[in-house]
Length: 193
Length: 221
Image 1 (cartoon, rainbow over the protein chains, first blue to last red):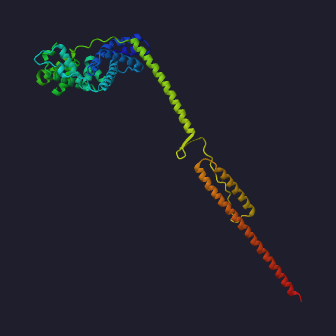
Image 2: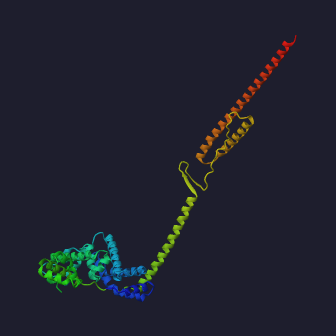
Image 3: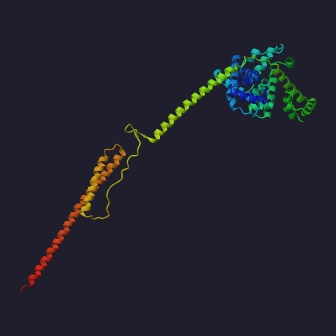
Protein backbone atom coordinates (compact mmCIF):
# COMPACT_ATOMS: atom_id res chain seq x y z
CA UNK A 1 0.00 0.00 0.00
CA UNK A 2 1.01 3.62 -0.10
CA UNK A 3 3.93 4.23 2.23
CA UNK A 4 6.38 6.35 0.32
CA UNK A 5 8.16 9.45 1.52
CA UNK A 6 7.52 10.86 -1.96
CA UNK A 7 3.80 10.82 -1.07
CA UNK A 8 4.29 13.91 1.07
CA UNK A 9 5.84 15.77 -1.84
CA UNK A 10 3.00 14.66 -4.12
CA UNK A 11 0.43 15.92 -1.61
CA UNK A 12 2.21 19.24 -1.26
CA UNK A 13 2.29 19.69 -5.01
CA UNK A 14 -1.34 18.60 -5.30
CA UNK A 15 -2.42 21.18 -2.68
CA UNK A 16 -0.66 23.84 -4.75
CA UNK A 17 -2.65 22.95 -7.87
CA UNK A 18 -0.50 20.26 -9.50
CA UNK A 19 -3.30 17.97 -10.68
CA UNK A 20 -0.88 15.48 -12.25
CA UNK A 21 0.86 14.91 -8.88
CA UNK A 22 -2.46 14.50 -7.11
CA UNK A 23 -3.65 12.05 -9.78
CA UNK A 24 -0.71 9.75 -9.03
CA UNK A 25 -1.93 9.45 -5.43
CA UNK A 26 -5.52 8.99 -6.54
CA UNK A 27 -4.78 6.19 -9.00
CA UNK A 28 -2.75 4.33 -6.39
CA UNK A 29 -5.37 4.54 -3.69
CA UNK A 30 -8.77 4.51 -5.38
CA UNK A 31 -9.10 0.72 -5.74
CA UNK A 32 -8.40 -0.23 -2.10
CA UNK A 33 -10.52 2.68 -0.90
CA UNK A 34 -13.49 1.78 -3.08
CA UNK A 35 -13.22 -1.90 -2.08
CA UNK A 36 -13.22 -0.91 1.57
CA UNK A 37 -16.17 1.43 1.08
CA UNK A 38 -18.07 -1.28 -0.81
CA UNK A 39 -17.67 -3.65 2.16
CA UNK A 40 -18.85 -1.04 4.64
CA UNK A 41 -21.50 0.82 2.73
CA UNK A 42 -22.57 -1.68 0.10
CA UNK A 43 -23.34 -4.43 2.58
CA UNK A 44 -25.17 -3.57 5.76
CA UNK A 45 -26.92 -0.47 4.56
CA UNK A 46 -27.65 -1.68 1.02
CA UNK A 47 -25.70 0.93 -0.90
CA UNK A 48 -25.25 0.63 -4.64
CA UNK A 49 -22.08 0.79 -6.74
CA UNK A 50 -22.88 4.39 -7.69
CA UNK A 51 -23.01 5.21 -3.97
CA UNK A 52 -19.54 3.67 -3.62
CA UNK A 53 -18.27 5.79 -6.53
CA UNK A 54 -19.73 8.95 -5.00
CA UNK A 55 -18.16 8.18 -1.66
CA UNK A 56 -14.78 7.39 -3.23
CA UNK A 57 -14.92 10.75 -5.02
CA UNK A 58 -15.84 12.38 -1.71
CA UNK A 59 -12.84 10.75 0.00
CA UNK A 60 -10.37 12.27 -2.45
CA UNK A 61 -12.20 15.59 -2.40
CA UNK A 62 -11.68 15.71 1.34
CA UNK A 63 -8.06 14.60 0.92
CA UNK A 64 -7.41 17.50 -1.47
CA UNK A 65 -9.29 20.00 0.71
CA UNK A 66 -7.23 18.98 3.75
CA UNK A 67 -3.94 18.47 1.89
CA UNK A 68 -2.64 21.86 3.00
CA UNK A 69 -2.90 20.69 6.62
CA UNK A 70 -1.29 17.25 6.06
CA UNK A 71 1.85 16.85 8.08
CA UNK A 72 4.41 14.22 7.22
CA UNK A 73 4.11 12.46 10.58
CA UNK A 74 2.67 9.16 9.40
CA UNK A 75 2.03 7.10 6.29
CA UNK A 76 -0.21 8.75 3.73
CA UNK A 77 -2.17 5.49 3.49
CA UNK A 78 -3.29 5.64 7.14
CA UNK A 79 -4.39 9.26 6.68
CA UNK A 80 -6.28 8.32 3.51
CA UNK A 81 -8.06 5.36 5.11
CA UNK A 82 -8.88 7.37 8.21
CA UNK A 83 -10.73 9.83 5.99
CA UNK A 84 -12.39 6.97 4.10
CA UNK A 85 -13.48 5.31 7.36
CA UNK A 86 -15.02 8.54 8.69
CA UNK A 87 -16.91 9.05 5.44
CA UNK A 88 -18.20 5.47 5.47
CA UNK A 89 -19.34 5.87 9.09
CA UNK A 90 -21.18 9.11 8.22
CA UNK A 91 -22.84 7.45 5.23
CA UNK A 92 -23.90 4.45 7.33
CA UNK A 93 -25.35 6.73 10.02
CA UNK A 94 -27.33 8.69 7.44
CA UNK A 95 -28.67 5.52 5.86
CA UNK A 96 -29.58 4.00 9.21
CA UNK A 97 -31.49 7.15 10.17
CA UNK A 98 -33.44 7.01 6.91
CA UNK A 99 -34.15 3.31 7.11
CA UNK A 100 -34.67 3.08 10.88
CA UNK A 101 -33.66 -0.56 10.92
CA UNK A 102 -30.63 -2.31 9.59
CA UNK A 103 -31.38 -3.89 6.28
CA UNK A 104 -30.32 -7.45 6.89
CA UNK A 105 -31.30 -10.20 4.57
CA UNK A 106 -32.96 -13.00 6.45
CA UNK A 107 -30.68 -16.00 6.71
CA UNK A 108 -33.37 -18.24 5.21
CA UNK A 109 -33.01 -16.46 1.88
CA UNK A 110 -29.41 -17.50 1.50
CA UNK A 111 -29.13 -20.65 3.55
CA UNK A 112 -28.66 -23.95 1.78
CA UNK A 113 -29.49 -27.31 3.14
CA UNK A 114 -26.41 -28.92 4.70
CA UNK A 115 -26.59 -31.81 2.28
CA UNK A 116 -26.09 -29.61 -0.74
CA UNK A 117 -22.74 -28.21 -1.62
CA UNK A 118 -22.78 -24.47 -1.34
CA UNK A 119 -21.74 -22.76 -4.50
CA UNK A 120 -19.04 -20.12 -4.49
CA UNK A 121 -21.66 -17.40 -4.84
CA UNK A 122 -23.66 -18.72 -1.92
CA UNK A 123 -20.55 -18.90 0.26
CA UNK A 124 -19.80 -15.28 -0.68
CA UNK A 125 -23.30 -14.28 0.32
CA UNK A 126 -22.97 -16.10 3.64
CA UNK A 127 -19.59 -14.50 4.36
CA UNK A 128 -20.90 -11.03 3.39
CA UNK A 129 -23.98 -11.53 5.53
CA UNK A 130 -21.92 -12.61 8.54
CA UNK A 131 -19.59 -9.65 8.01
CA UNK A 132 -22.55 -7.27 7.96
CA UNK A 133 -23.84 -8.69 11.20
CA UNK A 134 -20.55 -8.24 13.01
CA UNK A 135 -20.37 -5.22 15.33
CA UNK A 136 -18.42 -2.29 13.89
CA UNK A 137 -15.69 -2.78 16.47
CA UNK A 138 -14.84 -6.17 14.89
CA UNK A 139 -15.83 -5.49 11.29
CA UNK A 140 -13.78 -2.34 10.75
CA UNK A 141 -10.34 -3.76 11.58
CA UNK A 142 -11.07 -6.93 9.60
CA UNK A 143 -12.17 -5.04 6.48
CA UNK A 144 -9.31 -2.55 6.76
CA UNK A 145 -6.87 -5.44 6.99
CA UNK A 146 -8.28 -7.30 4.01
CA UNK A 147 -9.48 -4.64 1.62
CA UNK A 148 -7.14 -1.86 2.63
CA UNK A 149 -4.08 -4.14 2.47
CA UNK A 150 -2.78 -2.45 5.60
CA UNK A 151 -0.47 -3.91 8.24
CA UNK A 152 -1.71 -4.36 11.80
CA UNK A 153 0.26 -1.27 12.81
CA UNK A 154 -1.35 0.81 10.06
CA UNK A 155 -4.84 -0.43 10.96
CA UNK A 156 -4.11 0.52 14.59
CA UNK A 157 -3.08 3.99 13.41
CA UNK A 158 -6.26 4.41 11.36
CA UNK A 159 -8.52 3.30 14.21
CA UNK A 160 -6.42 5.04 16.88
CA UNK A 161 -6.21 1.95 19.07
CA UNK A 162 -3.20 -0.15 20.22
CA UNK A 163 -1.78 -2.74 17.84
CA UNK A 164 -2.58 -5.53 20.29
CA UNK A 165 -6.24 -4.48 20.29
CA UNK A 166 -6.35 -4.69 16.50
CA UNK A 167 -4.86 -8.20 16.49
CA UNK A 168 -7.28 -9.32 19.20
CA UNK A 169 -10.30 -7.91 17.35
CA UNK A 170 -9.27 -9.40 14.01
CA UNK A 171 -8.77 -12.78 15.70
CA UNK A 172 -12.18 -12.57 17.35
CA UNK A 173 -13.83 -11.51 14.09
CA UNK A 174 -12.28 -14.39 12.14
CA UNK A 175 -13.23 -16.94 14.81
CA UNK A 176 -16.81 -15.63 14.86
CA UNK A 177 -16.91 -15.85 11.06
CA UNK A 178 -15.64 -19.41 11.18
CA UNK A 179 -18.12 -20.43 13.92
CA UNK A 180 -21.02 -18.88 12.05
CA UNK A 181 -20.07 -20.59 8.77
CA UNK A 182 -19.94 -23.92 10.58
CA UNK A 183 -23.33 -23.20 12.09
CA UNK A 184 -24.73 -22.64 8.60
CA UNK A 185 -23.42 -25.94 7.42
CA UNK A 186 -20.51 -24.67 5.38
CA UNK A 187 -17.55 -26.86 6.11
CA UNK A 188 -13.91 -26.42 5.31
CA UNK A 189 -13.90 -28.50 2.18
CA UNK A 190 -16.15 -25.91 0.56
CA UNK A 191 -13.82 -23.17 1.67
CA UNK A 192 -10.80 -24.69 -0.03
CA UNK A 193 -9.80 -22.78 -3.15
CA UNK B 1 5.55 -20.20 25.12
CA UNK B 2 2.20 -21.07 26.68
CA UNK B 3 -1.12 -21.41 24.84
CA UNK B 4 -2.34 -17.89 25.69
CA UNK B 5 0.85 -16.32 24.26
CA UNK B 6 0.71 -18.42 21.11
CA UNK B 7 -2.96 -17.77 20.42
CA UNK B 8 -2.47 -13.99 20.60
CA UNK B 9 0.16 -14.27 17.83
CA UNK B 10 -1.60 -16.75 15.54
CA UNK B 11 -3.24 -14.02 13.51
CA UNK B 12 0.22 -12.61 12.71
CA UNK B 13 1.25 -16.00 11.42
CA UNK B 14 -1.85 -16.25 9.23
CA UNK B 15 -1.28 -12.78 7.74
CA UNK B 16 2.47 -13.39 7.39
CA UNK B 17 3.42 -10.55 9.73
CA UNK B 18 5.11 -12.57 12.43
CA UNK B 19 8.78 -11.68 12.98
CA UNK B 20 11.05 -14.42 11.67
CA UNK B 21 12.76 -14.99 15.03
CA UNK B 22 9.41 -15.73 16.68
CA UNK B 23 8.14 -18.27 14.14
CA UNK B 24 10.14 -21.38 15.22
CA UNK B 25 8.79 -21.21 18.80
CA UNK B 26 5.21 -20.78 17.63
CA UNK B 27 5.42 -23.54 15.03
CA UNK B 28 6.97 -25.93 17.54
CA UNK B 29 4.14 -25.23 19.98
CA UNK B 30 1.51 -25.77 17.28
CA UNK B 31 3.09 -29.09 16.38
CA UNK B 32 2.58 -30.35 19.95
CA UNK B 33 -0.64 -28.59 21.07
CA UNK B 34 -3.98 -29.80 19.63
CA UNK B 35 -5.97 -26.90 21.09
CA UNK B 36 -3.78 -24.15 19.62
CA UNK B 37 -3.57 -26.03 16.33
CA UNK B 38 -7.41 -26.11 16.15
CA UNK B 39 -7.62 -22.37 16.81
CA UNK B 40 -4.97 -21.69 14.17
CA UNK B 41 -6.90 -23.87 11.70
CA UNK B 42 -10.16 -21.95 12.32
CA UNK B 43 -8.41 -18.60 11.85
CA UNK B 44 -6.78 -19.89 8.67
CA UNK B 45 -10.11 -21.09 7.23
CA UNK B 46 -11.85 -17.81 8.01
CA UNK B 47 -8.96 -15.92 6.44
CA UNK B 48 -9.32 -18.00 3.31
CA UNK B 49 -13.06 -17.32 3.11
CA UNK B 50 -12.32 -13.59 3.34
CA UNK B 51 -9.58 -13.80 0.72
CA UNK B 52 -11.83 -15.74 -1.67
CA UNK B 53 -14.67 -13.26 -1.26
CA UNK B 54 -15.52 -11.97 -4.68
CA UNK B 55 -14.48 -8.40 -5.19
CA UNK B 56 -17.06 -5.74 -5.90
CA UNK B 57 -17.13 -4.58 -9.53
CA UNK B 58 -14.49 -1.98 -10.26
CA UNK B 59 -15.94 1.47 -9.90
CA UNK B 60 -15.35 4.26 -12.40
CA UNK B 61 -12.04 6.08 -11.92
CA UNK B 62 -12.10 9.14 -9.69
CA UNK B 63 -12.62 12.36 -11.66
CA UNK B 64 -9.55 14.35 -10.54
CA UNK B 65 -10.56 17.50 -12.43
CA UNK B 66 -14.00 17.30 -10.80
CA UNK B 67 -12.33 17.01 -7.39
CA UNK B 68 -10.36 20.22 -7.97
CA UNK B 69 -13.49 22.02 -9.20
CA UNK B 70 -15.50 20.91 -6.16
CA UNK B 71 -12.77 22.08 -3.79
CA UNK B 72 -12.65 25.47 -5.54
CA UNK B 73 -16.45 25.87 -5.27
CA UNK B 74 -16.44 24.90 -1.59
CA UNK B 75 -13.65 27.33 -0.91
CA UNK B 76 -15.66 30.17 -2.50
CA UNK B 77 -18.77 29.22 -0.53
CA UNK B 78 -16.77 29.05 2.68
CA UNK B 79 -15.33 32.51 2.00
CA UNK B 80 -18.83 33.90 1.36
CA UNK B 81 -20.10 32.35 4.59
CA UNK B 82 -17.15 33.80 6.48
CA UNK B 83 -17.84 37.27 5.10
CA UNK B 84 -21.56 37.04 5.95
CA UNK B 85 -20.71 35.82 9.43
CA UNK B 86 -18.29 38.69 9.98
CA UNK B 87 -20.90 41.20 8.80
CA UNK B 88 -23.54 39.82 11.18
CA UNK B 89 -21.05 39.79 14.06
CA UNK B 90 -20.21 43.43 13.31
CA UNK B 91 -23.87 44.40 13.35
CA UNK B 92 -24.39 42.61 16.65
CA UNK B 93 -21.36 44.36 18.15
CA UNK B 94 -22.71 47.76 17.09
CA UNK B 95 -26.12 46.91 18.53
CA UNK B 96 -24.53 45.86 21.84
CA UNK B 97 -22.51 49.08 21.95
CA UNK B 98 -25.64 51.09 21.28
CA UNK B 99 -27.46 49.37 24.14
CA UNK B 100 -24.53 50.00 26.49
CA UNK B 101 -24.29 53.69 25.65
CA UNK B 102 -28.04 54.31 25.49
CA UNK B 103 -30.05 53.20 28.47
CA UNK B 104 -33.30 51.53 27.59
CA UNK B 105 -35.80 50.90 30.29
CA UNK B 106 -39.29 49.47 30.10
CA UNK B 107 -41.93 50.70 32.51
CA UNK B 108 -44.65 48.06 32.44
CA UNK B 109 -46.96 49.97 34.77
CA UNK B 110 -47.13 52.90 32.41
CA UNK B 111 -46.56 50.85 29.25
CA UNK B 112 -43.61 52.98 28.27
CA UNK B 113 -40.17 52.36 26.76
CA UNK B 114 -37.83 55.05 27.93
CA UNK B 115 -34.55 55.75 26.14
CA UNK B 116 -32.08 58.03 27.80
CA UNK B 117 -28.38 58.74 27.33
CA UNK B 118 -27.48 60.93 30.25
CA UNK B 119 -27.76 60.35 33.90
CA UNK B 120 -30.59 62.39 35.29
CA UNK B 121 -29.41 65.55 36.89
CA UNK B 122 -28.89 64.94 40.52
CA UNK B 123 -30.93 67.23 42.66
CA UNK B 124 -28.89 68.68 45.41
CA UNK B 125 -30.51 70.23 48.43
CA UNK B 126 -29.91 73.96 48.45
CA UNK B 127 -31.55 74.83 51.73
CA UNK B 128 -29.54 77.46 53.55
CA UNK B 129 -28.56 76.44 57.05
CA UNK B 130 -27.81 78.42 60.13
CA UNK B 131 -26.76 77.49 63.63
CA UNK B 132 -28.10 80.67 65.24
CA UNK B 133 -31.47 79.85 66.91
CA UNK B 134 -32.38 83.54 67.00
CA UNK B 135 -31.23 84.99 63.72
CA UNK B 136 -31.54 88.63 63.11
CA UNK B 137 -34.43 89.79 61.02
CA UNK B 138 -32.41 90.48 57.85
CA UNK B 139 -30.86 86.97 57.92
CA UNK B 140 -34.29 85.55 58.35
CA UNK B 141 -35.48 87.50 55.34
CA UNK B 142 -32.69 85.98 53.25
CA UNK B 143 -33.67 82.66 54.55
CA UNK B 144 -37.27 83.19 53.60
CA UNK B 145 -36.19 84.27 50.14
CA UNK B 146 -34.05 81.16 49.71
CA UNK B 147 -36.86 78.94 50.83
CA UNK B 148 -39.27 80.67 48.51
CA UNK B 149 -36.83 80.16 45.66
CA UNK B 150 -36.58 76.52 46.56
CA UNK B 151 -40.31 76.20 46.58
CA UNK B 152 -40.33 77.65 43.10
CA UNK B 153 -37.63 75.22 41.99
CA UNK B 154 -39.37 72.26 43.46
CA UNK B 155 -42.59 73.36 41.86
CA UNK B 156 -40.75 73.36 38.58
CA UNK B 157 -39.37 69.93 39.26
CA UNK B 158 -42.84 68.57 39.73
CA UNK B 159 -43.19 68.90 35.99
CA UNK B 160 -40.56 66.20 35.30
CA UNK B 161 -41.66 62.80 34.13
CA UNK B 162 -39.77 60.55 36.49
CA UNK B 163 -42.28 59.25 39.03
CA UNK B 164 -39.71 58.68 41.72
CA UNK B 165 -38.32 62.13 41.17
CA UNK B 166 -41.81 63.51 41.47
CA UNK B 167 -42.22 61.74 44.75
CA UNK B 168 -38.95 63.13 46.03
CA UNK B 169 -39.81 66.54 44.74
CA UNK B 170 -43.20 66.40 46.39
CA UNK B 171 -41.64 65.48 49.69
CA UNK B 172 -39.12 68.21 49.40
CA UNK B 173 -41.80 70.67 48.52
CA UNK B 174 -43.62 69.68 51.66
CA UNK B 175 -40.47 70.09 53.68
CA UNK B 176 -39.83 73.44 52.09
CA UNK B 177 -43.33 74.64 52.88
CA UNK B 178 -42.96 73.53 56.49
CA UNK B 179 -39.72 75.33 56.71
CA UNK B 180 -41.25 78.41 55.23
CA UNK B 181 -44.03 78.27 57.78
CA UNK B 182 -41.52 77.72 60.50
CA UNK B 183 -39.49 80.62 59.27
CA UNK B 184 -42.51 82.87 59.29
CA UNK B 185 -43.48 81.69 62.72
CA UNK B 186 -39.96 82.33 63.79
CA UNK B 187 -40.20 85.81 62.36
CA UNK B 188 -43.40 86.39 64.24
CA UNK B 189 -41.84 85.17 67.42
CA UNK B 190 -38.83 87.34 66.79
CA UNK B 191 -41.02 90.34 66.12
CA UNK B 192 -43.02 89.71 69.25
CA UNK B 193 -39.88 89.20 71.21
CA UNK B 194 -38.48 92.46 69.88
CA UNK B 195 -41.71 94.22 70.78
CA UNK B 196 -41.62 92.73 74.25
CA UNK B 197 -38.11 93.94 74.78
CA UNK B 198 -39.14 97.29 73.50
CA UNK B 199 -42.02 97.46 75.90
CA UNK B 200 -39.79 96.36 78.71
CA UNK B 201 -37.30 99.02 77.78
CA UNK B 202 -40.05 101.63 77.68
CA UNK B 203 -41.38 100.48 81.01
CA UNK B 204 -37.94 100.70 82.53
CA UNK B 205 -37.47 104.12 81.10
CA UNK B 206 -40.82 105.19 82.47
CA UNK B 207 -39.93 103.87 85.88
CA UNK B 208 -36.68 105.65 85.79
CA UNK B 209 -38.50 108.80 84.91
CA UNK B 210 -41.04 108.31 87.65
CA UNK B 211 -38.30 107.61 90.17
CA UNK B 212 -36.48 110.69 89.10
CA UNK B 213 -39.63 112.84 89.46
CA UNK B 214 -40.40 111.37 92.82
CA UNK B 215 -36.91 112.09 94.00
CA UNK B 216 -37.24 115.71 92.87
CA UNK B 217 -40.59 116.24 94.62
CA UNK B 218 -39.21 114.92 97.89
CA UNK B 219 -36.26 117.28 97.74
CA UNK B 220 -38.45 120.45 97.36
CA UNK B 221 -39.35 122.20 100.71
